[in-house]
Amino acid sequence: MSKLSVVLPAYNEELMVGKTCRVLREVLTEADISYELVVVNDGSRDNTWEEILKAGKKDSNILGVNFSRNFGKESAVFAGLAQATGDVVAVMDCDLQHPPQTLVEMYHLWEDGYEVIEGVKKSRGKESIIHKKCAGFFYGIMSKATKVDMKNASDFKMMDRRAVASILSLPERNMFFRATSSWVGFKTTHVKFEVQEREAGESKWSAWSLIKYAFTNIVAFTTFPLQFVTFAGGISFIGSLALIVYSLIQYFNGHAVEGYTTILIVLLMIGSAIMLSLGVIGYYIAKIYEEVKRRPRYIISEIVSGTKNANAQIKKDLR
Ligand code: UDP
Ligand code: MG
Image (tube, rainbow, N blue to C red; front, side):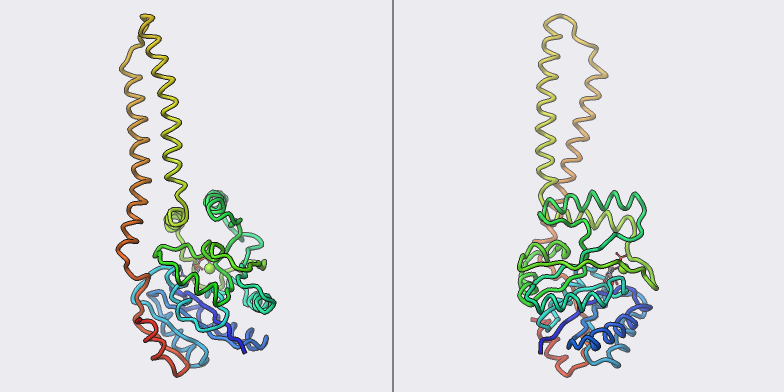
């Protein structure tokens, strides 16, 4: 019988993680799906790890992975994918905002032969207007880069072992999981789901972390900003040609304009354009630097498994 692995990244989720494991156990047992829960504690500062251990004592299908510090959700998802042993692997948030029932629906689609099943948000839930606009702008760029409509994409998905293997084989450290799962291709379909309200705990995203997240992922997935620098350079070149011709004509006709203000304006504009462009290029260089350092995506301090082969798992991880 085939096994489903569910990867659950958890950061400061002491209030939710136990409940999520319990609910998943109920739902999956009822649907008669044999499963494994890979709960990755992403360096939480609360008692999330203790809660995972407690849940593991009750349910031997839980594999707990403890990070040495907080590495971010993408790394936690990646670690979970690497540890998962199922024939099909799902990724979901461990705050029950992704409805567990949808998991069963996805599983049946996998049985029907689909290899990547994307969870698509029916609506984006409650968000402020500014947040909506920024998200719209970000996903506009990402959709162009991936050629997939990302507007309602989420991190809730199910993937066949083959798709998981190809994601794990990608060498880059800085990965945007949400887009990568469609980038790898395979026979894909999607399932619509309604984002649930968070029951307890709080969202880990501040406005600043979202902006950082957006920039990192744009840079991880597309060179569009670099091309934009070239494009802006081209436009300002055409503009300057026009201005040069105009000023020369004025000069030879004997009405050269008072120079100081014009020069100051042009100088400042060009100066800031150059600095901004350098910033964009610099950001890419910083990312290249991070990649060439080849640091691991995450460091695991402990793996605890309900089944007996925990040591085998750890060996696999130290490879
Ligand atoms: N998460 C994580 N590491 C982090 C931040 C978040 O593993 O550094 C997990 C978190 O525990 C949750 C999921 O990522 O399971 C989504 O986080 P959250 O619910 O805060 O995001 P939102 O639902 O508000 O987008
Ligand atoms: Mg959430």
